[in-house]
Length: 204
Length: 256
Image 1: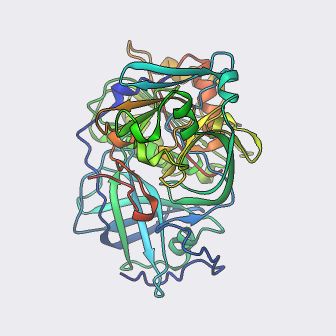
Image 2 (image 1 turned 45 degrees about the vertical axis):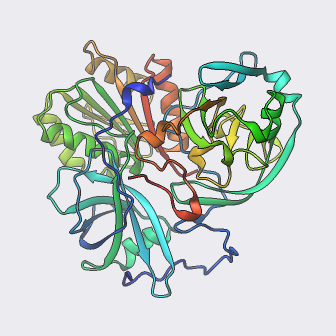
Image 3 (image 1 turned 135 degrees about the vertical axis):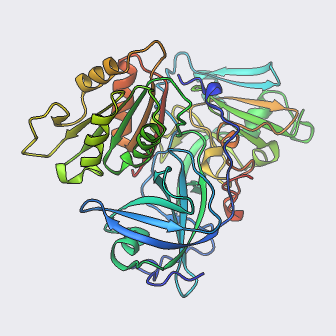
């Protein structure tokens, strides 16, 4: 369906080599979209846990977390509110390294799904396959600086191949679940997986 | 912290299918804000605070889509009302402000949104704080309350730069006269001639306005806050609210 009078962007057009998912626009800024106030997280009391159901498996305080192997990622990110940002630079702990530090082997993980949790009660669900083998990290740095609280600092999940609501800000736990349990936005009508290249924005 | 478990409402449907729509009317509400009515045959009712996505397609196939909060959800069946702010570099915004004509075809998706919403069956007092065009979903909440004759105490703090930027200025004043449980206050950050009436305040929304709203909203239930605007606005407002002991806060943010 053509919209008469609409000719597209005035400055045609940044070549994106297929990197820009359908329905997205490039931004050079870094918008902040959060469902509530920005929580202030103290490093002294910060803790990150891996859980299997309700059972705690392993947890780290800020110091021990930062002694885990560090990795960098340069990647494109995509928000469901239709902005994308190319070549963002992150540093943190790959989920692979975190699971291995918790005693897991990638070939024999306890369940197929996880809920990522945040200090403010937020949660989001993901198949574990979307977090392992180099796909996701718990990020502590953006652009070589400690992650600011408005962008999810001190630590957030980063799953760049899915819409950003899956990349829980102020992350404090990954919980293995038997089933794919809908998280905060997923309960409110958003898609269970959220692949930007398939435009999996809304469920139902 | 927000107890999000209490906010879940499973009754809200979502829609992930693009539907053809046509522009039914275009009307400038202020210098920078255009009200756009879109009519569609595949209309679904919306909840106050929800948004729709709008998609435009150029002749060469180029598409652009944006999310817009609904300005009202009590309007006639078959159409959605949104308010689009003029942005100098906005390809969608400039289409609506400069080129769009009644009868043009677009596509819509939704209504969607299950968090920043309000229903008139809700009886907890409500504090709405909007900055600039961030007031739009809050206006739909005010409309939902007054239209349903709900007696839930509700207070809107509306921050804009100038008097002439206020959307539905007269209408809001009329609504507060007709509905005792509704209060509306305007903060005018750049206006040099602030009317000497109690609902107009110079400068930004500050603590004393929030304290005053808190008083208006006294009943035994905790106040539910809705804050919408650009990120800087939302950050400063949520900080003020938390300092005043209010932590049931929903936010919707835009810009950088």
